[in-house]
Length: 519
Ligand code: ATP
Image 1 (cartoon, rainbow, N blue to C red):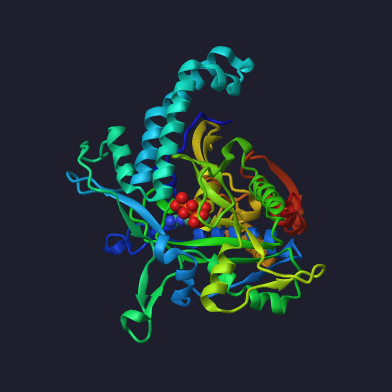
Image 2 (image 1 turned 90 degrees about the vertical axis):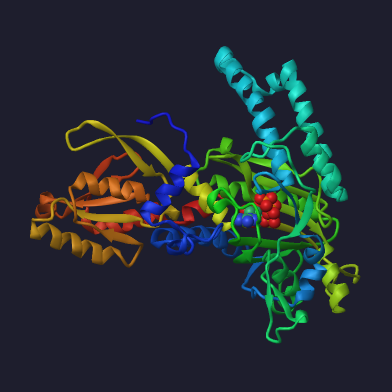
């Protein structure tokens, strides 16, 4: 039975802390802003997400190989990539509250709260009025008020993007003033100039002189580009082929908010696919579809995912889009897919003086490959997974009365704990002994827990909150005929199975290959 609900970000934050999924960094000292630590269950879930991505990329594709490059790189890497000169956020301060904001985010928030919300409200109203026959697209195309509002949004976005692309910070500020945007804290319109702020963290190298500046990488991709020739020379791959990497990235996000959505230290899962110039469009379309399939295989409803094409492109891209997920705070970027041309390899070739070219087998001509990139934040994927999984429904208590239960409906293949073994009562030593024996037998195959504390109903609730897909209950009948009950988390249905088949049955249902086979 499903209860109508909307999940707030705060529910997820509290749940993560309570269950040991995520803690704020250095919490005993008050907490370091926008930096988080993964607790005992968090690290398991995060590792499973990474494993799913890695297998989908490296194991499933003969033409993709892995890499683990260092966080520190020669500072010239960041000069060539454009990060030293252009990895900036436009910031503006409110003079009254002294709070700092990203100018583009202030404008996007304005659009969302002041215009888009009204469109959504009208769509919902019309939906209610017309029922099943309601055609949303037709409404958006024909309702006069909605057309006007959409036009206004497009006008604002196009002015903002033009200002961002041309570096016209004065006009960006003027747009904030023209829209009469107020500071959410002070309510005032007293804004400073807009300034660019570089997002890279830097530190000192061994020599500790100003020339020894080292950057903490703001993306993992450059480690792949500078190793392109090494991998090419050693991996016996042919074009097209890809290099995949999972690793930490660091960005000095000034306006860090929304929990692990925007962090200063985070993890990326990136794959650069090297193709012949001219073939980038074909592979861009291919990876766009493949990446969406990867998300959908987890059981995420299609209406919670969407493509968002970039209207204005970064200097290095000839096409780009985001896969957006409906987070508790709206549709936001979860993953980026970018056709990066030969920008990165050509820039590194120029600055390093080393050839980053390969020879076309047919024409014998040398060329710098083009690149299609898929880039997803592991932490953002973690938040999307939890947002999707977090549910409150109704479950019978020990007296059969329906009570609210919090349940994480995580896909079994990535759930941190796959199975809990529970003797129905603790006092019966024969039951606890048998349950422990079962636990000791199945723990070799997947991550499981043994729990004998509290009434059985409470123990089920504990596992539901954790997202454990299966509970094995050992009762009197187990002693008689060596069968146990297997309880499924979402439906709460129980089936009686022979104890010697637990390992086989659960392994099959939590196997990651069930996800990979859908790709
Ligand atoms: P945004 O516009 O949200 O700042 P971006 O376009 O700068 O993101 P990319 O540079 O394309 O992001 O990075 C690829 C992916 O890395 C993003 O889709 C996101 O999942 C993740 N990511 C980027 N910045 C952060 C961050 N500060 N915290 C957590 N994940 C991040």
